[in-house]
Length: 117
Image (cartoon, rainbow, N blue to C red):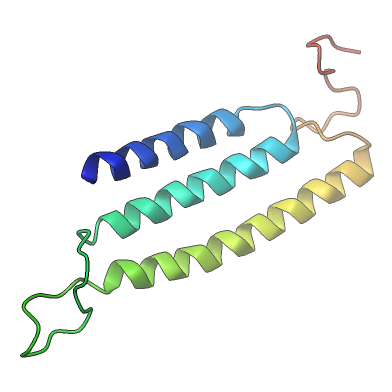
């Protein structure tokens, strides 16, 4: 189970970094979202993955799971949603002002084939 979680965190991080290095704004937004998902899974995994354990310590429970990572992930989800919304609005505004969706923001940015205008 730990190998699967660690592999998924690594895959999400690698795909997120790859998408961040693209030349258009939409893949950059997707890359930031993938990186935020990777951080959320990492934070959740730091709380020791336990199944069927209560988050509150009681006399009848044999063990408990740490509720702090769950609260951190919930907060991180809200923050990443707000961050994604702001980035999408900025990308849309840049596209409407400049006329293209290149990350560098230059009006005569490179084309898809790699050539410059």
